[in-house]
Image (tube, rainbow, N blue to C red; front, top):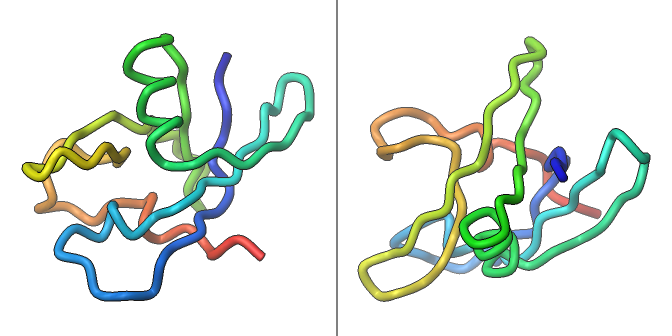
Length: 97
């Protein structure tokens, strides 16, 4: 199953790693038109352990897949770039209402 991430809910506090600030991700399964909200660690585990696919479609129509990662402190998160030198379109998604 693949889902498109459409918005994120972030904690507005200070975080050394901006991905850890993401609490929840809202998604839609475009194939069957079902929406849902899942917390950051569950999305991580679903992608890593259950062959799940989550992606973002940018303003130009490009599809970018999320990849699972773990911080040095052991916090699970997802991102779209292999290193933090490039902007991550996940962090640029709108806030969920």
